[in-house]
Length: 301
Image: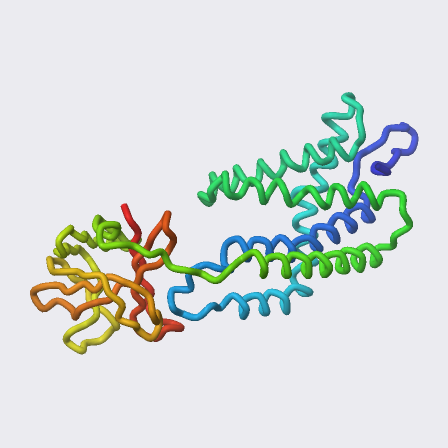
């Protein structure tokens, strides 16, 4: 691997992180990040419900691409320092007696290092371990394979960054075209009155119970203000009625929803639009301006 320096007078080799290997690792890490981000974007954002706000994904993508040249070098160095280089050191220290290609040992240690970071995220920040593990472990694969391929080749410190950038642009084009073809437009689920009946809850503690036959019960449920007071909505407890319909609100045209009318004069009738998916349906309402208004979401319990 070409790592290590020989200490004068002792003949012992001390493991170090050579600048050329570190630079190559950082360039490879930085080059793969835009592609990984685009894959995530297609998986999580593209084709998802925009809750009537207009899809802001294209704007967000433009911001990321413009900021990429400024932040990618820093992120590449950070990733190389946190995962790729320590994994290489561990591969030499721990698995050297086992033999075999050094890049294989490096790859194994990189996956283990990614697993450790995923576990740390689950413990410290409550990130879902099973969701982050493929990303943390997988992001070390290409840099390790790239280092093995570049080793022994006369690629200068700037040349590796140019090659990494060129490969990144090519992969972005392939992933972008493929994702655009595979990911379709979002379609809200078609739910009958029977499927809508049940208990719905919001993260803020709001509860909406839709009874069969059209009766509704609410607790802490946001509703359109009826008194013209300050704010876009009021919070109501009580009972009322509900029905399935299509109001055609400006922020959710031609989408079915649940029209809730509460008794007792607390709030006006409020239209809860159907969103989410067939497996995980949602009811949502957007109070105020479509771009910056207060979005409230209820999910089935």
